Image (cartoon, rainbow, N blue to C red):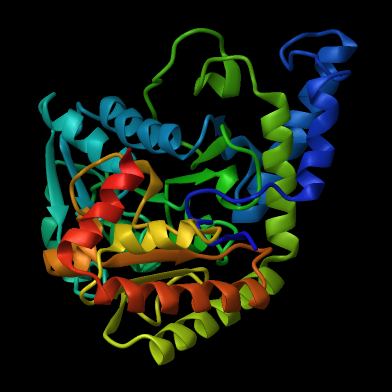
Length: 399
């Protein structure tokens, strides 16, 4: 049996998404900017998808900008806002557990004269609201804090931060803006830009059973952004480049399915995640569940296994057809331990002994049972190995 429990890295496309995309790879080949009928049909499909994405997060269609994915959305939000408002201030606030797309962009901006405050988080992965408030300065232009963490699933109090920003604006700080990376939240929990009070929000289709290579950035009406790409006047002059019509259509359908099936999907994933955790903790001694156990998305469970190297456990499970991860797929090429788990205060050994299990809409209880059986056997076997034997497993996997 093959079992895929790495849905935070990417998800399988929904059959309905594949079906609606297929015509736009062949007979519906038009460029959405062309004035002839082929182009206008493509344009209509793009605008229909824009309405679906907007409906998913309670936005206006004109506030949706199609981009290539979560990384571009984060870059456009952070760099675009910073460059557009550098005359008003050069201070940015973020956290130590953000996705590399945000952290690396902030680091690059530091090299260009911006000042960045990296806020700590609690042992559960939650940012302290007092820390956010105290960090706001007269020259702060952007607060960028993710809605749900990609490694432990913790949900941040973005709505309360949004209220904080509204209060600051009422005091005359109208240059202050709020961005949230909602890539791991959209399609898993209700996301409403009005309730959150955000100016910018990032999402990516392949995290909720849409295609790879397409995403969107919500830009609240009136928010100024500098462009990252120069060329045509696509996306209301926000993002130059010929539209990826097939991808956009797929994102639109994935958004529709996420909106209409959210309660069913979310409830099913939460039930299976809780079942997974109960099986693991009852079958395997010395296991720690990382992150806040209450404020988290329903599909992610990050665990540390005492006395076990996570990569060895991952390899052992992969050999049995089970896919899990040791952290973010976007950082998997790094030899450094997870910056997220380090920020939560885990020891180096606990970080090295961690695995992330992430479920999707199509995960079944039968798959969980099989995966947990293999996990239990593999953990017991690895704990019995000598350090040299364990290192040999890891070494062979990299050959």
